[in-house]
Image 1 (tube, rainbow, N blue to C red):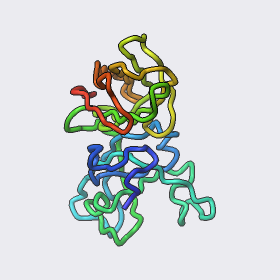
Image 2 (cartoon, rainbow, N blue to C red):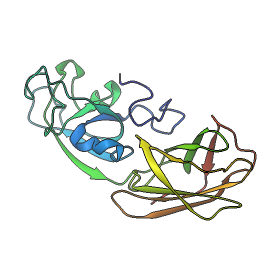
Image 3 (cartoon, helix red, strand yellow):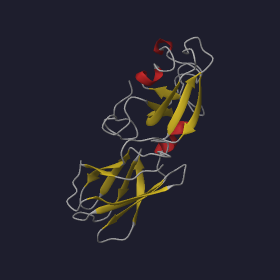
Length: 213
């Protein structure tokens, strides 16, 4: 099984909306965190371990599969650049092939992400520094850029912190917060107005009844 938090910062993958159909991406696909939240259809291809009928599993990128420079890319260093590799969670792997095989060749394609519910914003930081983890994003699934607006501010461009988190160094305590997100791949824009109340607190998650579709 992959680490529950992962390099995208989603924390518990069940509460974040992702379940067990997840994957860690090689750095080429992870793209410094901009690949977080992207969805892929994956099918085992050309191996004895592949299940009959070539079933497809749809997975969400929630983690990074780091390079292993001590091993060659065709024997242990599966996630070494420029290799494309998916390190599937065991339940996802088990839907397309016998998991005892460990490594199987696959066919894959990017697909839109279907999500139940709206986008979730987990807030961290304090009144003067806001860090937001964005989860359960539908459509493109990923984030290219993000803005925050308090009741007393204009739109503030947030900087990419790491994974699927963005930050703003602004005094936003005691203000209801709105967010604007642009997808990295689909270029769609999502508006979440007043999603966090004026008494928002660090460690709390707020859900907007909107999504990319």
